[in-house]
Image (cartoon, rainbow, N blue to C red; front, side, top):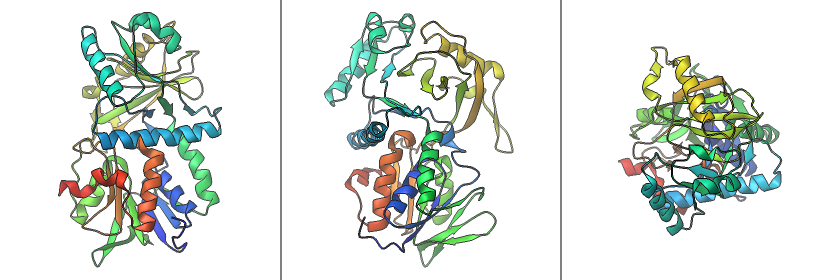
Length: 373
């Protein structure tokens, strides 16, 4: 990337972790970057992500390898300052409903077989391995993955944007729904909802669940399996939780300010999408999620929701990430994935390299958008 001409200009659509990470890597290499957001930074999926850093469970080998590289980049960032409240590695703990101990053991064996750090624990072993967990909530057994962690994406984006501005990046907030400008079959820039145009040598579309709709007018079909989801942030409480919890009724992780972030999917049918694109959910359903989370924490502290955000969780139709240049529209790149948090740093690094050099990175080969053609 160091041989790239500094005059190369790239327009990035999307103010989440994928767009910001790629933009910063482009700027580091000497490119000129304009970053457009529909509203504010992390106003969509990156602002309501559980952001659990992991490669647990079953997935394809290329996807696992990419996620492991993603976790590695976070470990490098963590090592540079372990005191950061918004990036920590306290492991991950998961368990299945009662009666599924065999499924948990099978998952543990699968993880061991692929070299993933995995411990199968009895409830009595949990306290010493996973601080802050109420072991009585575990029905039979649980898997502890010591190498996992979590990140607060709004804080990470704020951290990266400081470098973005230092390196001379141009930020266009509240640009509305931007579109890719094509001339002669090639992407040559982007246009904001206001009509303002930004010329560029290359364009990256990284706007979460909206990515397929942005590239659809270009004749590119990327199946969209994005469901509606919610992230709840609790009021501060002295919880003592270290690991991320993935359990049958609540997913929980620590969050800056001694708060907790809560997520799951059982309440999706209670979410209403309104004609103006906003969402709502009954307050008692939000409190029910907080109550479920309380059962998992040592001492069962009373948890009160402080805020919650609802929107589409980006998931490509086949579940695998979509990264790289569009064959139909040279110069236009896409970044669309369910694992935006885990892949945020590595994807930005690899995509910036592809955009600036034209060389396709082998770790992204499985995830090209043309697989849907």
